[in-house]
Amino acid sequence: MKRLRTLLGIGLGLAVVAGAGWYISQSGSSAPSTARQGRFAAGAATPVGIATAAKGEIPVVVRALGTVTALNTVNVKTQITGQLIKVEFKEGQMVKEGDLLAVVDPRPYDVALQQAIGTMQKDEALLKNAQVDLERYKKLVAQESIARQQYDTQISLVRQYEAALVVDQAQVDAAKLNVTYTKILAPLTGRIGLRFVDQGNYVTMADATSICIIIQVQPISVIFTIPEDSLPQVRQRLKAGAALEVRVLDRAQKTELAVGKLDTHDNVIDTTTGTVKLRATFDNKDEALFPNQFVNVRLLVDTVKDATVVPVAAIQRGQPGTFVYLVQPDDTVKIQVVELGVTDGEKQQITSGLQVGDQVVIDGTDRLRDGAKIRRPGANPRAASGPPVAAAPPDTVSPVSPVAPANAAEPQGQQRRRQGNGNGGGAGRPAQTNQ
Image (cartoon, rainbow, N blue to C red):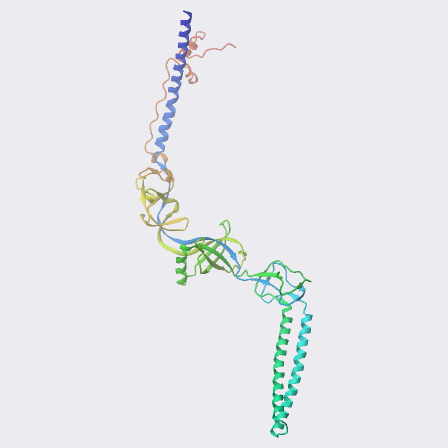
């Protein structure tokens, strides 16, 4: 009998626990259900961003990477042998063509020049004497006073002296040229780099090290590569006599450094990369471009006018092909297949499928489908979503349990026992606590 009472007590306890769990689940499920209904009703219209197709111009731009390259670079070396006695330039300075850069000791070459001049003067005197004798022999031959052979020998002697004077003149000119070479002049206008040879060193024409390097920086060029598929359009524009504009930007593509024009292109395509080299020239008056600098190039090949354009963000790709979400008058969207033209990275030309004035979705496309309801920017969410959904009635409190909602989770048997344990308390009074 005792065992039977124990089993009945355990069964009663399990029934109380099961009833409490059922009550908690029923009381907590009503509010989330209502919230889900409200969210579903509010999400019926998807908020989107909209743009209007318009007429515009789209520049056809070829983007490339380039390197700033000097049009002329000169390694300044000596053309004679001697000691470098003067250096007249400062590292990094701008020089003009003909400016004095350095001086090689000219004294040995001055001496050689004087020696060549002296030799020439001696041969000039001998020539004059031979010419006088020739005139004398000419008269004597006419008088048959001397043999004809002596006259012919004198003519040959005069010619020898004349030839010697030609050689002497060449030696004098060479000596003068060497004296000129003792002054090293700037061969072009440009900027000098660091000095490689200091004053006092002995320099020769066979030296591998130059005295300095001069680089032409005004104007300057940028060499860049483009895909071979873009070359025909570029060549066609060049043959038509068009001056193609080239803009260069810094590495971060935030600052425009210079604007120039396309000069020429290479005569071969690199078969390993499928690209071809092009050269653009720039005045570079502000020296914003520096030799061997890395730049981003924007080559303006052509400009498409009166094109129907939309933002690039409106273009979608999927099973229908290339399409846009076309906004309908009833604030729904329709999948509209379009054909694309050229783009500049921000705007896209539409060759067919859209008309000027059509509205397309540019933001929120990931939540759309054909025929979906949308909410325009700035529209009232309630108006876009339709009439509000009536809220579910609040949960009915059990008439047997008029206590605070926090106690609603207790089993009804425990609530009755607690209500009956008060000191004559009614149904609406809380139980008193002993202090």
